[in-house]
Image 1 (cartoon, rainbow, N blue to C red):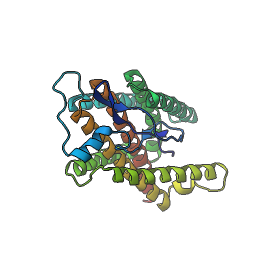
Image 2 (tube, rainbow, N blue to C red):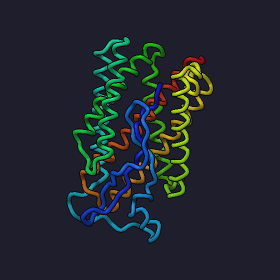
Image 3 (spheres, rainbow, N blue to C red):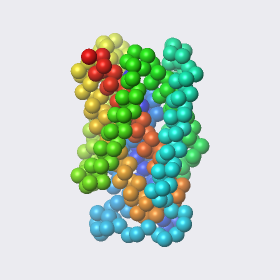
Image 4 (cartoon, rainbow, N blue to C red):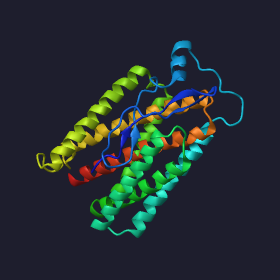
Length: 288
């Protein structure tokens, strides 16, 4: 099963008319057939994070209306994830497990990828694009989840619990200060992530041309499990970048509509973790 990430791009914050905003310029890209946008160095495009490193504590956000708050981020994220969940539930309930459904899932994934890429290149957040991405991604997740469940009963439920566990653990570790998102941390993490993607692309080509059988590195065996665990750890790494950028946006008064970009990034990361977790559960179930 492919991981779901079309581009590695991460938005930092940049000055725009005197206030902070998400920098929407993508930094690097790749396509694997399923929408995703992750990664990046938060200090490379985030002058406010650089100021924090140089001058200590960040200044207080302007006491004016129209600035992003944590409530805004939570509400937009809940809305986006809700659309993903609704699309998944409807696809699961209405589409039978068949080759036709799988084709529809791939088509939905491609549409979601296009919408994610368009949003990644836009300078401002578009709720319509983000929610459209969420809807089509939800259809894809619903179909593949039903397929996994038909073979490994309960796998999607276990994958959801695993995703929640990874997300909660990452948040606790981040808030406790055990992980500090510095420029060096981001550079090392992104180097590992891009190397991982390169290896997965090569593996995909080898499988496509029949050089590597049974999925190669993505097989349903011990090697595939190791690769899946690495992918989930990368998802946790992306979450820490998301958390840092949200904190920076709130601290420096990013516009309220930027909460949609925060929700977009979090949704992309959580989908990544869920897909990898679903595959990992199937691998362990196959070896029982």
